[in-house]
Image 1 (cartoon, one colour):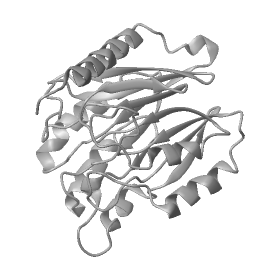
Image 2 (cartoon, one colour; image 1 turned 45 degrees about the horizontal axis):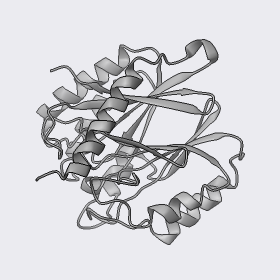
Image 3 (cartoon, one colour; image 1 turned 60 degrees about the vertical axis):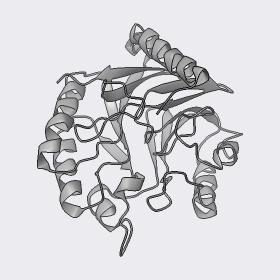
Image 4 (cartoon, one colour; image 1 turned 180 degrees about the horizontal axis):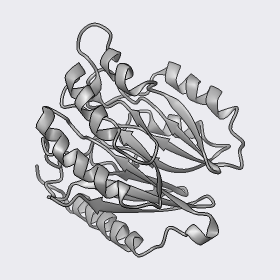
Length: 263
């Protein structure tokens, strides 16, 4: 894969923003807090959990992290044993966590989400947390790489937002990217989904799928994708760093940083 000059500049800008955010304190004195996201774990066999457990240990060493969201592709390809291995490792997290499925977590036969829901529960959820509302949205269409959020899920989102005060900050968590200039195919109807939040304070959208760090802001909304957190897969942008992303939340403001998992 070759990068165009525009793609290279966007990637470089994302890395600069990620690094500059590292110097920002989580603003704990002002009631701020931090959450972490991990994506594209791609658990293939039991030994793959070694890397994941190191990521979990690094998160557990940071008491400012109060919640974790897993952004899909938990498994290399959906399979009950792989979900079980992942769940066992993730259950070592000290902060509470939730997950959304990725396209690799969908079964090709039978009930598509049977193994995912057995271990990780609901695919779409609302998580009131502190003064924020976190929303997990299943962005999958089977195992497709490029997707459109179906009308049924958009209607579910509208219904949930009716119960969320318009003055409260909101974050959206999905597997497929919503980034306006996404390196990986953007959700086809991303703008229509984002329009549902027009009367709400959507502050950031966190996604995976790209296997690379991309950070950009549009219309006051922060959009991110993050390098994979996996020993079984590499990054699509060919960078060597793997790890997780932190979001430092204070009031309705947000800054972000990428954290590499030590090998």
